[in-house]
Image (cartoon, rainbow, N blue to C red):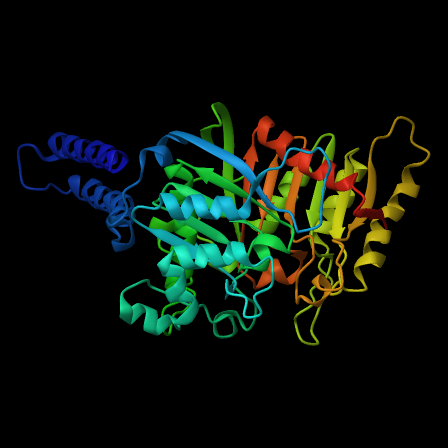
Length: 453
């Protein structure tokens, strides 16, 4: 409210000055009428947005005014490494299971979770499902959510549950975001679904962010958008309320003290129709990060296609990211893509990757030119029993690390995910985080599980 008070007091004093100079000794004189009308017009323009009901309930927080977060935030990379996958002497990151358990054990007031689907119980009691069973049994709320439909859970008072109807809202798409917000200060965001296989049988990666109320506040605005759209008969508004706006994006990141060092961060989101004022569209964040790269851009995603694939006979070419990669290479950036290979991979992925690689031939005549595209496929091995698991044994990562930025998202790099599917990305402009994420990429790129396209 400090900013609003300052503006109100400033314009009030200006109005009084005009009044005293023009009409101090009489009723409004003809010469004062134009000034009075002009003053009323100015005041209307100034105060109307301030008095708008959408803003009256909004208290601009200090970090939003200053652009600096005073919290002592921490971030670490969390992973699920599938059973029977080993990286030798590499120091393991915190597991997704341990990260989730930390969040649940430390929660005191609230847990807001955005998930694609819910499948923590394995009806076949597969040998590696014990971690999700542990989470399920030791936290009653998960029991209620797993065994009861949303409306009944609401009636029980155990939790509030909403589901988004993307067919009604957008004609198609899904809620593909995987995000936790705990006590308005701890966050998980990454690739892991609320599925027991995401804890043991799928290769996952995300960020665990703790003691960072500034970032939690910004994530909560995205959660609120989802929550509103999950209401009965909800509609996407032409204009979202300004109290849900963000103040931070690629060109104006939030300054934060992260892991005891200064850093910058911002959160991006898709689809564009879900984005409030100043929220960076996820694909715009990705292309901006690629454009900012000076030396390298390392990309690890499950699927990569410069097209849409789910538009039911109306798919289209969608080269936004593909063009950004080609531009980066032309500008001398070394680009590496690590794409997943499993029994659900689309056959057209490899030809499109080869198309990217082919541009290397255009630069062979350039001396001391560092721009180059390389691509590999990452395959998670399976034994006979593991091969029977549905939608498992895959590298499900969705991240990019450049020499400047460490980005972790929830979307596959296919057109649909940025057009009519909900996803988020979080970017850190922080050398230490860049190093941590690049270490993971380098480990995977050089592992026995990766092979050239």
